[in-house]
Length: 614
Image 1 (spheres, rainbow, N blue to C red):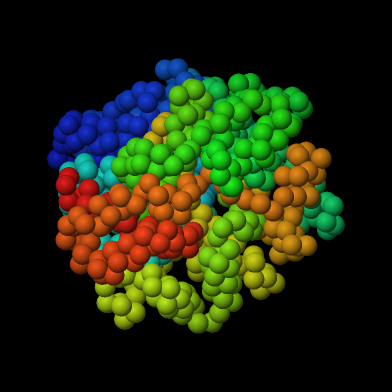
Image 2 (image 1 turned 90 degrees about the horizontal axis):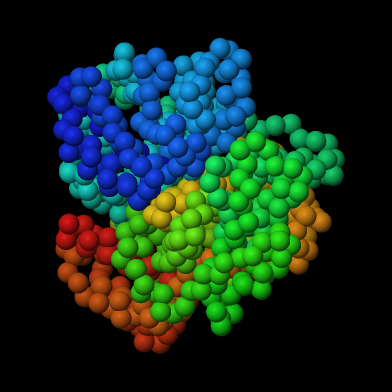
């Protein structure tokens, strides 16, 4: 897990050392274990790497790494969990390895299989491989876009990095605001991350399941993965289907416990994270495999002392079952303003809330030298989310609209209009131009996939949430907030084998008898605390935005809205926004719905204000 960067000067002029050093240093937080820079002989190509040492943490895992014959060089961010199996296969073909790293396995796989190596990988990755002989560059991203790859291209150069802010601040290209994307983010913060476009006109996102060839200045982008093309045949009986789910989940957790450094988990007390930590404990009892970390008994819980949504009791119950002594990260009212600017900056985009609890939890992992966290992300979008307490109205509206979108012949634009009309009626639509200026939806990965005719409404909705809207945004957030502290997050529910299997299941296997995630709940019977296995309550470890906006954030929001940021004023009716925020704050009527609708405007103004200062 690392930060990667690269520069290809298309016209053949030399890359200045200061250019690649600056770009690499801008992702230094992602890799505190070491740094490396490589130039080709002509010096018109340069790679940079900041290392987070997890597999083969000694010198053998240093990057940029050259293949044994010196022809290929790689920078790689992520993990290939099945690298031991691939290594054995390649050794049988005559490959000789010099290190114990998964990076060298990728290089050997490239030599053996080229692009066809990607479907063989079980993992998460963003990688770049340069051929010193042909001078061709290959970039690829994992199936579901867990690890980021941002790039920018001009007539002079092609530049890539792990974060968009690194590209924008590098000085290597102009980065004007993409007004259409900015407007879209404020209206629909989940409607951008699945696209190739970003907040900045010159910066593009390589979408999940895609790769790029750069040959002599020309780009070729192709999609190499569609989940819908890989759905397996299902066992005939429900009992067999439950058993198969558990087998896949067990193996997914076991693979993700491969580490040469300590690992742990972020424990919320809900079903997903409890299933992960209890399965980690079961794996140890069954017998650890090669390269599994025995230093895994670390659980970190975001706790909100004295308030109704604190999940500490449930997390304690889960920890007792797994025989783990948890660390509680207490989040109070005063934490609303703690490190606020840094947290907003580390998010590297605009979101619906201030992710202080997440950021502080991963900071605690770093303080205790736990480098890897196995977390429960992806389960909600794969099998149906909880109704989060305190958010029922917002939850019902979002899911009703998503259900319409999955079945309607009107399409996304019609649903977009309906959602905007509702927001406008609630007095929480502030974009200039009114309803005549509603920003058009962006093309999102996976939206054009032809889904099986027999699929029900739930499956169709989950497919879009998983690939196009909700999950890509959540993955971005957790990548940035964890890597801000040099922490790698692994996601057992996002093993591609488990994803394709679960996607193939009918709606009733995911939602029945008033419960979501039924296949997983049945699979985990007798493997986790019963009260959590069949529990309906869900909070998660997001920050308590209504309480904070009604209290400690009120002064900050008032001060922010008084600042002059001309580019923001061109986008937003600030008079109406300021008046609405003032009324909500004075009456202390912020709730989850208003917080999630209005915070993107506040986040955007903060971000554009920082950009103006820079």
